[in-house]
Image 1 (cartoon, rainbow, N blue to C red):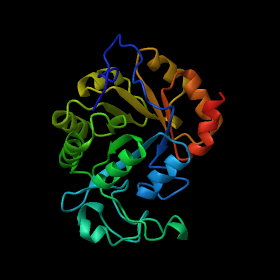
Image 2 (image 1 turned 90 degrees about the vertical axis):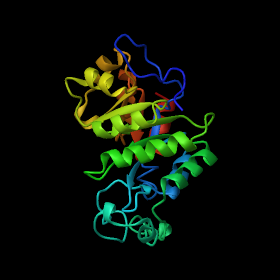
Image 3 (image 1 turned 60 degrees about the vertical axis):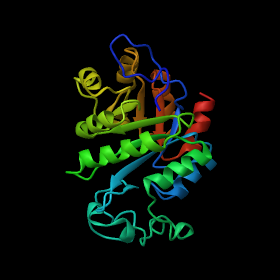
Image 4 (image 1 turned 30 degrees about the vertical axis):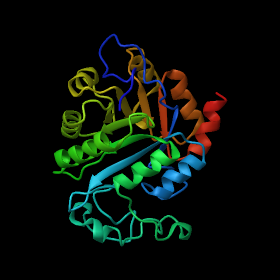
Length: 262
């Protein structure tokens, strides 16, 4: 559940989100293990990350699973739409062999399986609602309901994010006690009104379309800014020096030392 200091942002707010790590493992540790898998979550923890980010979408039979793409082709040995396959069919696919033989037969985990691993490893999480187009409300409701029912009140920190306004609205209606982040590529001119409309605590932006000066300006308004996906230590240090709250990275093992010694 959202804790004190993680309230939705309002003009005049002070920078908050105590406990948010400066480094978050992207899709687990995407450069070191197959993304959005239990092996990836374990690898992130092994590399020293205390926070991870991953994506959740629905199978054809409405089960939330960890998957980024609308299609299965890139990260599994399956083909076709993620939304068109059942959990039983998905569980037969290899979601690790594409990365390396060492991860062959790693499977696509359910969201509930991921939650169990997070709690066991005491890993905090940024859960991205990543719906297949047309499934925004259903995906958001399922994700938020599972978290409202299953995430322990004294468990690791938790932040929900999405690019979809529809998904954020539905998730917040389902689980208003959780904390939410607005995901964007380029920071829009109306970011402040969007954050207030959607009840978001944080703003997550693509680092390639965001300058450190822009981060500094937004952070000065009391907004925790998370930058994705930053894999260069010097770039990460520059954004953190400018006032970014956190860096989301494929290589936590490279970024963590830069943060520790900046």
